[in-house]
Every structure is written in structure tokens, then in C-alpha cells.
Image 1 (cartoon, rainbow, N blue to C red):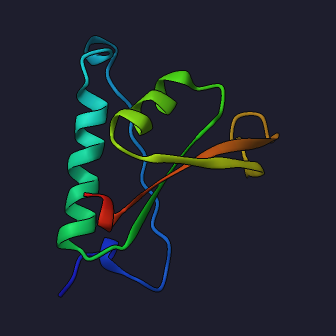
Image 2: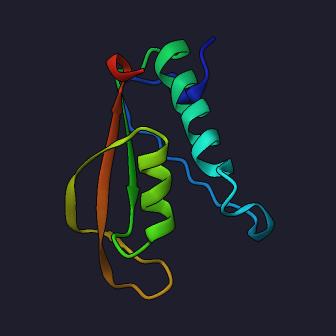
Length: 99
């Protein structure tokens, strides 16, 4: 039996946030990098994507510090649950070959 995250036929999504008291300490980039390493090495994923709103500077820094590469902006790709507005996402990726 394999974990649900191991499915190659579908995309899986996850999210994260950092407690205010832990912000600025490198906790999020380290956790994202550890999880990415596990997914790429142990689960056999070839590629991971990380998306964040372009104005969310903290999340963009997490992606970069965790070793993800910026690929571009996905325009109006997501509907904001709070406002119903379509929002852009910055797209970052990490490949198994980059570990």
C-alpha cells in the first residue's frame, strides 16, 4: 500500500503556514525542503511545484530558500475563497535531479 501522495495520475496539493513566533527563523524553508526531499526521493516524484501569490513576499522567500526555481506567473489561475476574485500565482518548481 502506498500513501495517497504517491499517486502519479493526479495532482496533490498541500499547504503550510508558520506560527507568528516561528517566523523569520528558517523553519518554513527547512520544513518545505525536508518534505520535498522525502516526496522526490522516497515517493519517486519527478517534480514538485510550489505556488504563492506574487505579493506574498514571505512565501516567495520560502520557495527560494527551499531551493525551488522560479518559473513564472500563472495569471488568474486560482479563485480566492475569501473574495471570489481570480488571483495570479507565482510558480516555483523543484526537480528530483536537483536534490
